[in-house]
Amino acid sequence: MKKQVIATPAAKELIRELENQHGELMFYMSGGCCEGSQPMCFKKGEYLVGLRDVLKGTVEGAEFYLSQEQHEYYQHSRIILDVTDAMGGGFSLEGPLGKAFSVRSQLLETAAQEDSSDL
Image (cartoon, rainbow, N blue to C red; front, side, top):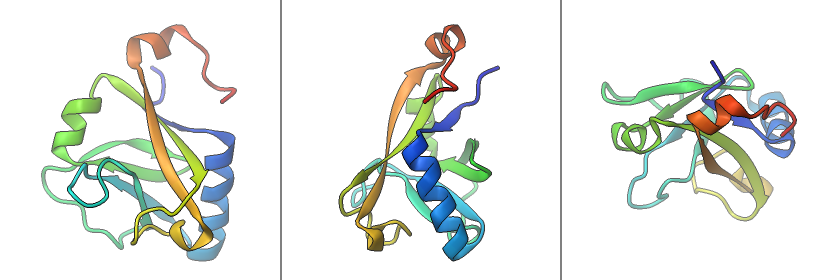
């Protein structure tokens, strides 16, 4: 079974940098009105997930949660975490660094047929 959340080399590098500064991390993607479907990065435990939130997987050791609505959308997809030079979400840890985490997706059927380990 392929991992359901993976990261590009740039995202892995930023995660390591943020872990060095803040300790263990977690991600949450709500699909809400303000940040949309942008993943938000927090210190582990800083954001309290709700009963309907779903743990999609882990990325570089950090738990990656989706709101129930986002889970319905991504349930048959692998999430690929990436990063760009941009202003991220106001509460996400990468924002002050001028970075923003982003996602794209890949159908799990397709992921099972490809080797994505060299992202």
